[in-house]
Image (tube, rainbow, N blue to C red; front, top):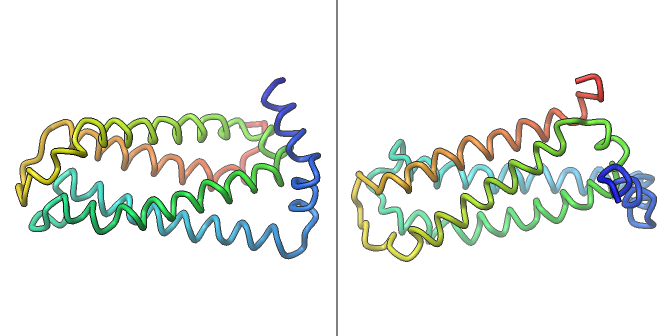
Length: 166
């Protein structure tokens, strides 16, 4: 099954039809998606700015991660679930948006970057203390995260405005 067939099947499903035809549920899901995106992306930015050494240098990375991670992950889960629901409701439009696959690829890349950071540095972050100079790999992960999540947000917001003529 091709991607366009999958998106069309999702759209034609009872869930997709209900969401697409709902006067109130679709805007509610989209609103929750945007709010949770702003919430989780904002926390990602704060965390990454600490990793790259631009902000909160006096606060140990372990404290920043400990305080923000649960909220960040909660916001991301809500964003992910509502994003899937929006995909059900907007399947045919997504087929016409050539940037949609790129957005999905960047989400995957950003997620892999986060996993790499957790496995490579997650266990040692407490030992960094309040050091301003962090491991180079942590800074790279922070920059990759900032750039990739920013592009995800930009591409997501462009989807309704770009058609297959892009």
